[in-house]
Length: 244
Length: 244
DNA sequence: GAGTGTGAACGTCTTCACAGCA
DNA sequence: TGCTGTGAAGACGTTCACACTC
Image 1 (cartoon, rainbow over the protein chains, first blue to last red):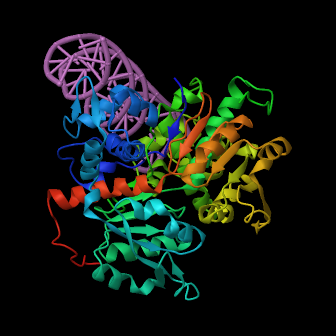
Image 2 (tube, rainbow over the protein chains, first blue to last red):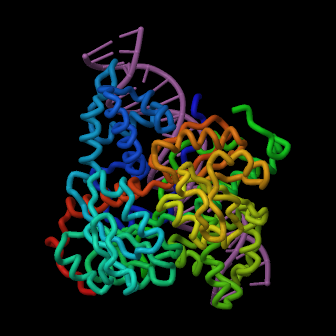
Image 3 (spheres, helix red, strand yellow):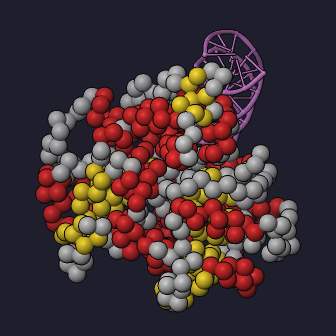
């Protein structure tokens, strides 16, 4: 009731289980997408020194119902105490394990333009179990620059990077027209998980998992809701100052 | 069969219709989330000079089944021709209208760090119906800098900016610890649509629509699939060179 | 023949309601 | 008493199958 509204992310779009392989012990995809959010909330709680949390409190923090939270967490096993709640630290551990975060994945970031810079310097990237193995760019003028302690290397060294370090995730932050080519290069090098920031729809073979983050899409979804709001009831004249 | 796998985005997480108001003529939320993707594909087709497209072809481009494409498009009305397909230009128009893109929304971008720079310079931001009304930052050292033709202004001018221009969307690209405060400031100024890049869960009153883009979440979802793949069948030894 | 538009079947996710336990 | 864990019900989304139209 308090923090009413939406906290949307984006939307799953393909048949997710299709490319990834068979569903096994089966944590539902919808739950998987929320686990990182719980994890963040739990980390925040841990920092305040709170040791236990109820499904209701977690629900309020992440936006949703207590029942949903319990269902989600029940997929990892029964780690709550009736009448009390969940142990924060314990939950963090179980969720991390379920997400495979203890493995210390490393990522290779390709395309060091504006966005690539931001990503390389982004704390959340490295803080939670992920490390950047290398920064690559096709433009010779950008090669050699040092960001966050890493030197930008030419994209031609991709195969070498994959061979040296056990990179398992590729992040594409190139311009749109280079993305498909880079993607194929990544796949050829053996990468099976790709996070794509370029505004194109990558074509990949079966068994490769691509997630796309697309600013334009997010804005357009907001636009839809905004115009609906304006069109249906016209609740406020124009730019009336909301109370506060 | 060709470009098999996933092209996931992220996942809707809250009760989306709840904060946004009543569902009226009812384009389903899942469809709304795909409309921008169709739109992108259609623009690309238009550039190649193609004038019509079938549901099957669109499905291949965006990743999904033809039936899904037809269902989605049927929610906008019956704009296809049996035996032929859809007119590219016409579809673009109808989707744009449905998404409210003809209104020329303008956005205010707050937090001009690495990410803010990238967003301000991002073409897709301005190219499709959105314009940046102002760039704001709390740090006096960043105020005055000119990016993409706009001067960075102090965040204290937010209310003035909202009053001057009819901004309807706020984009938060500040550090995590400033995001909630900025958010409240936006809401107080009358903004009801927010795109949040800070890794925090914003608390907003009812009627405000927040979408979050979270790199860590995306990576963690990839991590889950990756570790599942590795754990279940162990299909490839370790870093075996995939054929190519 | 080719491809749309759509009811109906199916599967997935969410919500409810309550039994069970600390 | 308070809160978890979970079957069952319900809402939502996807896929199928086919009538209909160009």
